[in-house]
Amino acid sequence: MPEVLKAPLVVEFPFTRSLSPVQSAFLTGLRERVVLGVKTRDGRTLVPPVEYDPVTSEDLGELVEVGSTGTVSTWAWNHEPRRGQPLDTPFAWVLVKLDGADTGMLHALDAPGPDAVHTGMRVRVRWAEERSGAITDIACFEPYDGAGAELTGSDGRFEDMVTGIVAPARLDYTYSPGRAQSGYINALSDRRAVGERCPSCRKVYVPPRGACPTCGVATSEQVEVGPRGTLTTYCIVNIKAKNLDIEVPYVYGHIALDGADLALHGRIGGIPYDQVRMGLRVEPVWTDGGRYPDHYRPTGEPDADYDTYKELV
Image (tube, rainbow, N blue to C red; front, side):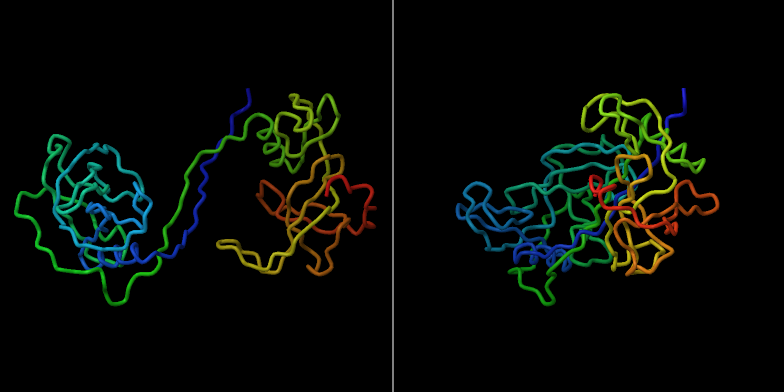
């Protein structure tokens, strides 16, 4: 039984968004150590504030200050904090109804253990030392048995209002390519390209998926293809990608390897970008120790006739 391949992968990007007047005031208030809610027509105070009444869908905009102390309404203990969570030691996730609010705010509670947490306990905001106008300006909540916090009298108007935020989005996952793609990857380490042939329509798919996407039947017959191929279509990249050491502009295209019935992706090099064309015959270029072709370059052969690759564009 061949080794099952797997690899840790990360998808990460910064998500930039603008803020509504209500959100802008709320986050600016946190920067100034003020917690704001929004009043509904029936007198409820919602914290964190929202732009629309979740019951009636009416527009909301009347901001009111609430206390930085409150009461835990429910909680759950987090034994193993993960990357990016508010605290790096075990803590409780809590819903806190701040004094003057009618809804709960979700945040972390710094407590020595689950036995120290209970519904109804009093807590207060622990402010971050450095604040920028984000929910992380509240570092966490902490147990508190003193009097309620005094209000500042803020009406939600501040200087230098926060108008936008950048929220990092990240997904960590482990990818396992399965039998068919593992065979393809292992062959690449020997500088070979292999696909699998459908027993019904006889098409050869590279990279293989273990089943024919047209017929829906399993594939297992390995077929070596290439190494040369035909550029079926392409695009010119003019924006440099982060952490990618390739100067722009460069060309990225679909390459139909000889003997394959599916085009794969690859970068085209060894030719000025404005001379790249459909039908260009190319071959792979490997780097020392590389597990896949670094790019494809022209072979010097005459261009392929369009009719030979039109089904793969």
